[in-house]
Amino acid sequence: MVPGVRLVVLGKQGAGKGTQCVRLSHHYVVPHISTGDMLRAARKSGSELGIKVQEVMDRGELVSDDLVMEMVAERLAEPDARARGFILDGCPRTVHQAEVLAALLNPGHLDLAVNLHVPTGLVLKRLASRRVCVDCGATYSVTSPPKVNWTCDVCGGEVVQRADDTEEAIRRRLELYERQTAPLIDWYERRGQLAHVNGVGSPDAVFRRIVRAVEDRRQRGRVR
Ligand code: ADP
Ligand code: ZN
Image: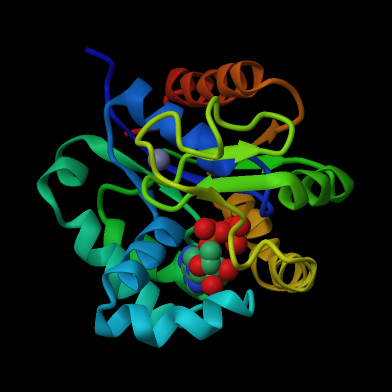
């Protein structure tokens, strides 16, 4: 059996994090922990947390570090993540979140932070045409829709445009990415934990690049 992994995936909105993280989680047999998916699930369930974060999310703003890190800490404490690791998608998103995460993971630490790089012009195009399943989160686009009538191929749910994929909210999210999340690239680089991966290309090609980056890192013996 392949060994597990502890991976953080960084990248702009629309860089393809979600798609790659699902594949990586199957490949390494570790849970895909997406803070965006967890927050959307909370909203759907109508929980107190969900109500609290709703407006912030629709504006494209960030949910507070405390709320997010509490949620992530709980998830990382579950047996599957403790035993084999995780693919962390959408978190950390601020330097403070990265510091909290590093403290949570001690002494096991992190194998690698992957920076999935895609030029802004391309992510804008991808986001504008992105459509998602309201039930399972599978992603489609105007150019590769589900087979039948905007009904999810995976679960039959309704496939729609995300409330925060409007031009206004996209601009806000990318602005916040540059200001709050891009500094994380240096943060991980200084710690010798970063790998840059080119996110332009077919999903298969990008996946192979990420796996190669992880394997390179293991071979260089910088992992546990
Ligand atoms: P995207 O990366 O396209 O913005 P996500 O699904 O990762 O999409 O996140 C959707 C929204 O959820 C974000 O705009 C933000 O409001 C909230 N969110 C997700 N992860 C975090 C996080 N780590 N810290 C703060 N807010 C978050
Ligand atoms: Zn679905």
